Image 1 (cartoon, rainbow, N blue to C red):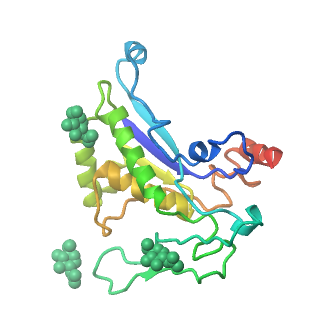
Image 2: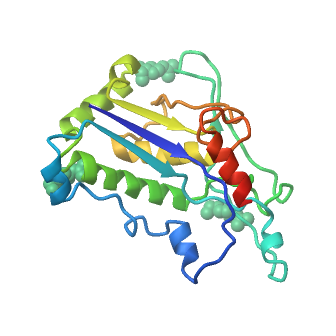
Length: 235
Ligand SMILES: *[C@@H]1O[C@H](CO)[C@@H](O)[C@H](O)[C@H]1NC(C)=O
Ligand SMILES: *[C@@H]1O[C@H](CO)[C@@H](O)[C@H](O)[C@H]1NC(C)=O
Ligand SMILES: *[C@@H]1O[C@H](CO)[C@@H](O)[C@H](O)[C@H]1NC(C)=O
């Protein structure tokens, strides 16, 4: 049995307004509204067991991709206050004798007003992906037809803590695009899925450079060229 989680980013224009509620729906303000559900009775009658689950999850709440003023030219000046800090470390354990660094974006000297990068994650993301992880547990682990049970999840958790990558990798795999917002989403999601809260625990997550990433709509996407074509047709 295996499970693969993918955290990806898809770029398209959110400012095409279909209805008044577009914001709540597009931004997944209430993750329970579109929740992944367990197999229903009809599904269960058709399968003997779950062998594999692949879950694609979009990144959580983030800042805009252009200045706020470009969307609301007549509004009072608005600013984002980014409180999720990116801490960058080259330390794998506490024996290498190096500190970590915390990024601070210089106030009002970036594309987006405030102290954030373009598309940087904001606080709501943690709530969204914590709930998403609980829903996944309910749907595929704590369920009648489960991919694996809680004991097996705890075993994986222990192997992750002990850095036994070759062991847990046989059962579960995590992937993300190499973006702050998707990695921040992964951190929130995996902390809740695995009930881990110690920053010294590093969970291996597979990624690509943005030029070749199969989950990004780029011209050089050799794995999924249709994604690039789709993106150019939409924009
Ligand atoms: C940003 O948010 C933090 C945490 O809530 C707060 O301490 C800080 O004063 C805020 N900064 C601004 C400029 O509003
Ligand atoms: C490094 O971490 C280990 C395991 O958590 C701990 O036993 C040890 O005291 C730590 N060493 C230092 C220098 O902090
Ligand atoms: C799984 O379900 C049981 C029974 O409803 C509950 O007590 C337990 O907390 C659930 N576990 C998780 C991880 O949600």
